[in-house]
Length: 336
Figure 1 (cartoon, rainbow, N blue to C red):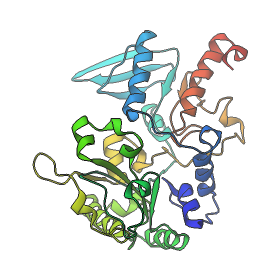
Figure 2 (figure 1 turned 45 degrees about the vertical axis):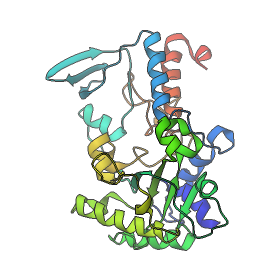
Figure 3 (figure 1 turned 180 degrees about the horizontal axis):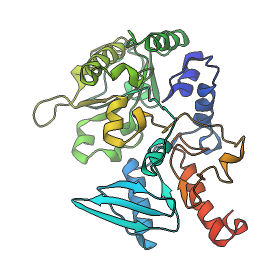
Figure 4 (figure 1 turned 180 degrees about the vertical axis):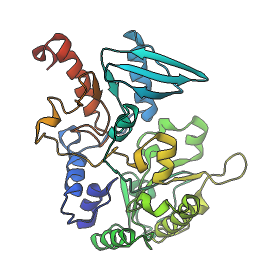
């Protein structure tokens, strides 16, 4: 039970249970505030349905959406330089809402940042022909995988894995957990896949800090994946590899992403999924501002996970950044 509770304190956070900085405490807090009950919802249609709805609402409100562009710089006056294809363009806004890590925003502003965030997870996505059989034949795999499936995540196992990683070694028995979103929401699969019994599995491996992949990301990724699959196989009645769906070229449908992969592909500093260590949900000094999204530049606001009260896929920073802008335009009373 201690291990199951502790996992919610370690998702995306590299810390021991008694870390004096209390990063694990803050992470646990953010995992338990969902909907006021701690419940986490899965959006029908997948996360793409959420972004699609946001995009539709923005277009109806008159927004112009530009994708596939790279922001090159931001000025405190609200000027944004970006590259679209081979062309550089400039736009100027009354406010710039930045859904990037604070360290990334500092770079775009031409400022120095002393922050050194570090992600600590191995993310593995799989598509299965069917769910694997369990050692306990009395349990239906659909029931077992319908929630969070914990693998080698006892308190002692988590602490051992942390110590190994802190010493610069991949954990010998990687703790991980699995989510089968296709059981919760079959609409993320096509009709043919649903009829065939295909399922998706997302595995989140803990205590895999970016430092373990610096010397040889490709080699360390392969080794981390091998060890993680072996860890999972220990609680199954058959190897998970036997259940993987082959793609059009006959290769198994599985991909693994290290923190360094997430930095290269998504711009997350060293793969930190919360952009930086989570903050307490209150401000303890004047730097937090009114809404927790303010920067030292009046026209530049954070609207991503690195804001105060950010992280945990909460959407709180986006809401608060919008409220900050509305408050400045119409007065705080109407914004609230």
